[in-house]
Image (cartoon, rainbow, N blue to C red; front, side, top):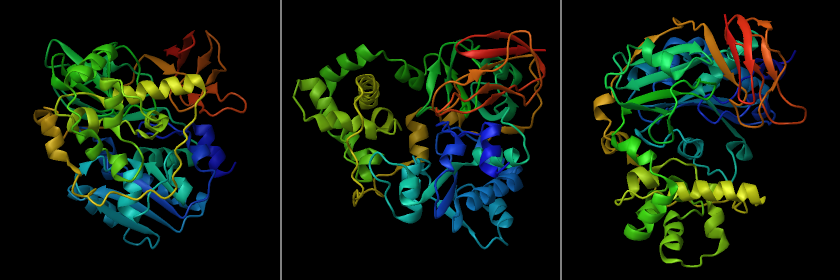
Amino acid sequence: MDLIEKIKEAGVVGAGGAGFPTHIKLGKKADIVIANGAECEPLLWKDKFLLNYKTFEVIEGLKAIINIVGAKKGIIALKEKHKDVVNSMRNAVSNETDFEIFLLDDFYPSGDEHILVNEITGMVVPEGGIPSDIGILVHNIETLYNIQNAIKENSVTKKTVSIMGEVKNPQVITVPIGISIRELIDFVGGATVQNFKVIINGPMMGNVVDDNDIPIDKMTSGLLILPSDSYIVNKKSIPFERNIRLSKSVCLQCIECTILCPRNLLGHSIEPHKIMRSINYKKVEPINIFTSAFLCSECSVCEIYACVMGLSPKVFFNKLKKEFVVQGIKNPHHNDKPIPNMYKDERRIPFDRLINKLHLTKYNVIPEYDGISIYPSNVKINLTQHYGVPAEPIVHTGDKVKEGQIIGEIPDNKIGAKIHSSINGIVRKINSKYIEISD
């Protein structure tokens, strides 16, 4: 079995949140492979801890990818401020001639792969494109760790997660996939406030969840527990219709959302203020203003940092993208030579300032690190925990399964990833969303 097939069998997907099946991503040749250790989403720590505690595995995963795609070198991108991680990785690659360490300034969203490519190489990914279009592959640190495990024929059955905010003991912990959010909160000592909400995968690009019994999956990077009336919870909970009413009443057309848009600064033809202008003043804009929604990276800079009135162009971009998919409209924006804004470096968003804007400074602490020390008696394995179509169950209710056993296959000729049982147990329930297993 070759390496790509092993990675496919193990169910490896992008572990930073996108969830794209790695075996497909490795189907293209590349000149450069970037290990993305920026982890720029506030209050996420898992990648930094994996770099420190699983250094060898991460390096070996990067080596494997370089060999698979025929790359000339691997570049490990780290934030300069994380001195311990930087020193650890420098020591680890000191004898490697094909590796480089690239140090990033502390800004958001430095971990966005388009931003990362431009910072490291000076090149710009085409509109609507991906780094492989210009001969570069970008992989999350945990993905590299999972690739090394896949080479040893170990499936993806565990996830490393940051648990931060209003909890007794903030931690980074590796746990079986399918464990519930509620169990993880209890494991770190419980919430320290009575009325709280959970934001999954970070305060900027993450979402508020209403059910704490939902399971974590391969795309879960972190849980942020906050008071129910906190700024960011309220911001993310505004209904779409209210966003429209607010936009019509208070938008200043100051264009700050466009001035600070990271993709606009790279030269991509996305101008959030024009979307707002169309909504507010019923101005008929060219269709390309609306289809520019395809270029939105959903970084939330426009709604959380840029807009002085607290409005959300991103909400409208999301709505447009969903409607375009339903209508069968595809992205028409493909400028392959965008020209970055000459002021893009001056318009970076300082990380500390962003934390303060989010009212999260009190939670910006270094958590403890814990290996696998929680073994749930019940898990719910999502059938969709990756980009593409849901996995198809290949087990039945009542079947005995072992940890690492394949329980969901990729449908024929579709994009997807295999899923595996994360514990030893018996299949108790199968529905359209998950497979439930208990001991």
